Image (tube, rainbow, N blue to C red; front, side, top):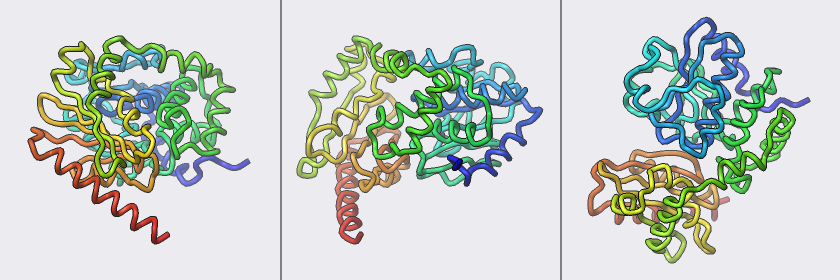
Length: 340
């Protein structure tokens, strides 16, 4: 039988050996999504099943629609994480779904200067841990964890299986994105065998939207504008939009996909005004667009089809600079395509 991630087995084994007998924090990125929380839950449960004192840690709370994934997994988040509750500074760390060491936020980055493990699938991840379990070709960090658990014959309990399933399902856009491969479906089949109910998981993730989020969606749709001859669609959310709708920052999850979904659009963008600056999310229909390179021009990063950036302070010239960067990348994509 072929193995799912043979090239990562040595690093994964080294990570498991490094955490033996230690107290471990399984750290996810700020503003966590389904892949982040799903992977944290699964890795934490894997370590605890092996006798490791592990706890999942995130600087932001688990989003409302993902709280069902946690189960009885020990989780420290929000203010408790900032204050170092449970002696977090005395723990070793494994980072999950973090493109770089700064992704968990400055407080956790300072707390864990040298992680023992780094489980990730971002193109921009160049390795920052003792053991780097990284594959940019994977659809999700959860796919990597699921595949290695199968490869090593490690048991996957129903809670971990559900968490890994949601991580894969959300990062593949419900199995619609180009990263969806035969390997993804093979692993999802294994997770279903471990007890996952896909319909129940989908109801929790996609059928429990708040009214405030739908109001925010309306504001976003009203703001849409096309650039680059209609190949790019950009939508905007202001601090006023959040104040007037009562929506939270986590309610922006998935909104950018509406901009990308328009016929003829190659790249959809959500520009979000914050009190301390600008956040932008970029989504492309094709990996050839390499939106991670656009984000990198502003200090951000991500995947070929999904990336993000933060610009402290923002500024009146940001939009023009963003459109210029997108235009340059579209031109580069045309050249690259013509040469293949």
